[in-house]
Length: 70
Image 1 (cartoon, one colour):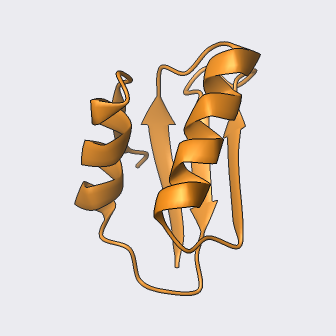
Image 2: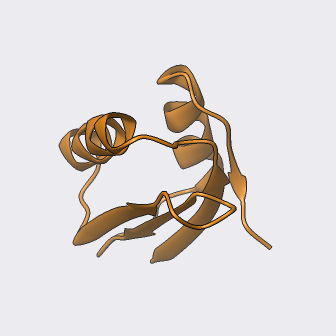
């Protein structure tokens, strides 16, 4: 599964915090946030199917905007 999301994560500190939280909560092969991109793209690669809504709710609970990137 590859999930690509639009966020408002804008600092290296927040990026690290979100990546660590996602990696601790879900089985992921890779997780990254491109804070240089205008959409602050969160990309998650997982060996299992993760519901997009679950990721959105998780990131939102961390205090950030998150939505599916069309």
